[in-house]
Image (cartoon, rainbow, N blue to C red):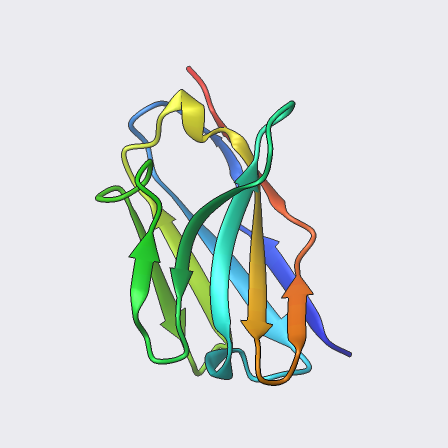
Amino acid sequence: QVQLVESGGGLVQPGGSLRLSCVASGFTLSRYGVNWFRQAPGSEREWVAGITSGEHAIYGDSVKGRFTISRDKAENTVYLQMNSLKSEDTALYFCNAIDVRLGANYWGQGTQVTVSS
């Protein structure tokens, strides 16, 4: 069964850090481009960061320099390390795995990140 499961969200104070995990089952995640998106209440879904199958990482302007996306091929996992968190980072975070050639596009259920004092 193909599945993506996010974890690692929680409540953190401004300036703190969290590491989100996106674990894949049923397929080899390293063969896919993986993106992190987020959606705050009342807002549209926002692209946060992505990593290609060739390990090239790209970031949205709002998180550049604070967030880092990476892979662990052995664990079939993509991480999003989030540092210097701000209240505006509060959102439900989703991971997405995509392979255009295969026509495959998978989403996880999301993990909540709340940045508040």
